Amino acid sequence: MTEEFDGKVARVVVADDQTVVREGIVMLLGLLPGVEVVGAAGDGDEAVRLVAELAPDVVLMDLRMPRCDGVEATRRIRTEYPGTQVVVLTTFGDDESLFPALKAGARGYLTKDAGGDEIVRAVHSVLSGDAGLSPSVQRRLLERLSEPEPRSAEPAEPPDGLTARETEVLLLIAEGLTNQEIARALHVSTATVKTHINNLFAKTGLKDRAQAVRYAYAKGLVRPPTG
Image 1: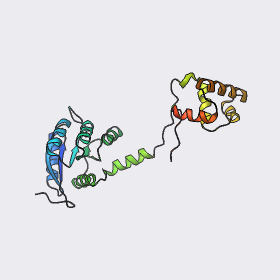
Image 2: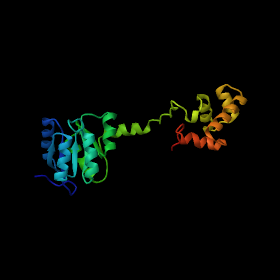
Image 3: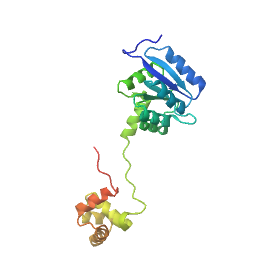
Image 4: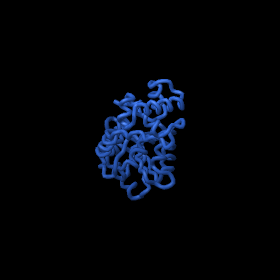
């Protein structure tokens, strides 16, 4: 009989398309305190149906399944049955698997090398409002968050009929450069810079450099600073 874990037994549905794996997870969890497996699904559609029928606390969700994969099933469960949390339990720890699952609403993410105790901890973590993430997934999230933001690429077609050079001048204005500094950066004369500025002001209807800076941000040519 399942014992209580931190005062609560979590009711769990296991979703995995591989019968041997699914039955193994069910058997493992049946030996551990703090969880009660109330159902098992072979694909995402069945997982959603069992959630509707059984109202479990948590679904342990595989990602790669036929008919309805784990990401779509997670999205449907979190939208239609928000009282049920989802912990992904999958072989895959790559970005293409991790981030779509988290965006779909999964609160936990474990790879299948996780032990039974780790699974139970993740289940109860998500029920208490925390994230149930394996150490390797936590490291990947931190790495992703620490990666520098890519610079905005210039659009293939500059806005309002600006030429590539006029757009380049606009970006330098947005960076706070003076006409003389722009001239040095582009290896042109100050008079040429003034001509480009007059042309881009005429095409965009701008009246001064402050408006030009706002315009550059509004058109997505540059991003606001962060931090």
